[in-house]
Length: 214
Image 1 (spheres, rainbow, N blue to C red):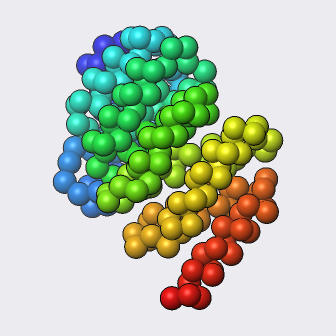
Image 2: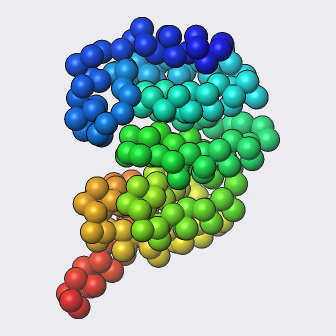
């Protein structure tokens, strides 16, 4: 599949009303208006039809088109649990996070990157850097990237250590001045609470204690 064929396929799924709504929500830019559910369906098919390294090349071309829907699709093409020799893919996801302009792109990239982190916890170093960024989108990315850890029903010792490292700064994220970041942090804690209520309650208590000290 060529980038031109991929873009043509996305254009054929476009909706002008949805595109206008995206423009209102995210600001000036190029929008096709493909429904999120349809983007996911197409991505699932393309992941099956296009193997690596060609899929990474296709994703790069879609991202570089600078079209919102194509950028989201680029991230979805890299969203896969098992990928052999994934260092280049991880590096590309990190580079795109720095270029992302809205929460929808960040969330798609975070979903892709989170799968790469679960197979190599050393990549959490990048997440911790994002968590202290001055840019709200980066702070949101830190939580989306690490969300798979919050959803682990039976984490290993190393995974528990990684969770505790996140909780260190998550207490601050819950009080982030950016309400969107704070809501994402709250979602993270609620996901953790489904499997580890002890840690989730501890985070809430720390936040409440901090509020009472103000």
